[in-house]
Length: 201
Image 1 (cartoon, helix red, strand yellow):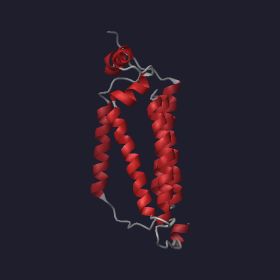
Image 2 (cartoon, rainbow, N blue to C red):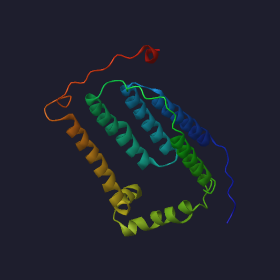
Image 3 (cartoon, rainbow, N blue to C red):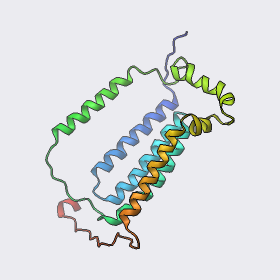
Image 4 (tube, rainbow, N blue to C red):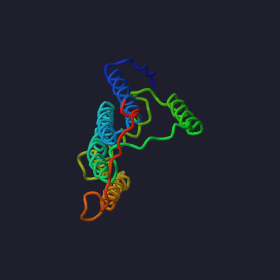
């Protein structure tokens, strides 16, 4: 088995650019007090994630992220905004050291776990050496579906796909129940408060 050496390629630079934009958009969502802007930024985040999945050759996941994250989820959140004001209420400026410590510890553990992963594109990696090859060779015999991606989504991981569909269905029903029947704002009046001088700056 030959040793695989990863090289810096244009695809890697593209991935780093997409990850950088994802981080910038995430911080922008955290800093914004305008709920409409947060919803739009979340849609942009989903589109960037879909582009990142495409660069990783996970086109099926990219389609799902674009359709669900940037499409359906954005529509559901815009519908849910009908029940709320357009600006977030000012939060107390108390520090949360425990929450920050948990986030930093979790992030450090995830980053440490990536050091044990095979290099990107390594042909000797388990996913490329055995699992992926088995799907390519055995799918035509196991399932009468010519497209391997369709076979994986609809048969091999059919229960997972069914679960994802149920999540979207449940979210849609929840938004409909929140909006209320026969009323665009759920039967109650929502008034936006005037932003303070500090928030307006």
